[in-house]
Amino acid sequence: MANTYKLIEAKTLGSAVSSVTFSSIPGTYTDLNLVCSIRTSRSAVAENILIGFNGSTSSFSAKTLGGQGNSGVDNLTTARLIGPADGDNATASTFANMSVYIPNYTSSDYKSYSADAVMEDNAALAFAYLTAGLWSNTASITSIELTTALSNNFKTNCTFYLYGISNS
Amino acid sequence: MPTKLIINCATGEQTEVELTAEEIAQREADAAAFAVAEAERIAAAEAAAAAKASGLAKLMALGLTEDEANALVK
Image (cartoon, rainbow over all chains, first blue to last red; front, side, top):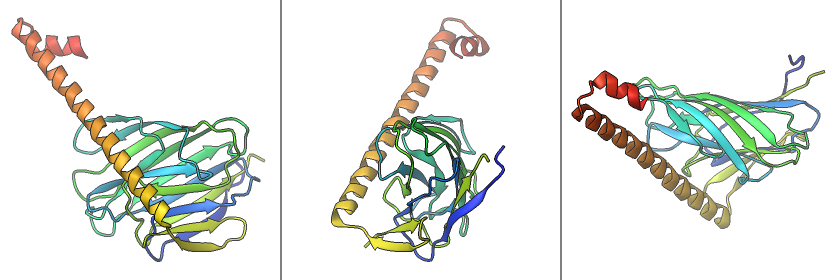
């Protein structure tokens, strides 16, 4: 059980942006936890959010279990996917919530991560995803980038919190 | 012009930078590729569901009840 949980950086968007990058992440923690609240500009109920490390979008693989409120369960293998986010047609002023946990981000092994994300929408359709992901790269993670899958923007008032967790 | 937000965790500096033409082109290409992959995934799922329904119908045509047919294809 982690005995430290320290906020590294936080941001509430004052204007729309196409991507959010945490750069120069200190290597002084054991694990990282990125916690976000996201609404996008996509003209639909939902959008997908993708993650990248160290400027790389390759060597990622993932398994996602998805529920969508009004039909069956999805079993996705979309690389870099960490969760659904509200599109601009979701209920006004609602945001998706997601948490990405990255253990041992400075190790010389491949980097695993898990993500837990759910949309907020006052309608029958709202997605929830649980993801197990892998970045097959041995480099220490020094930056994390979030983008939308379909070239949309993160809207004003989205929030992003990056925490560092130490095991001692 | 779309912008990207960079939060420097060492300095705390937060900057918004306009995307270059190359970055915009890459972003559009990535989105198009994602849309194609997603459409293929949905089509495959729909094809699998249709094949299952077709199989069930054929089993029931052989005389199995719906419960018996469902039990075979689960």
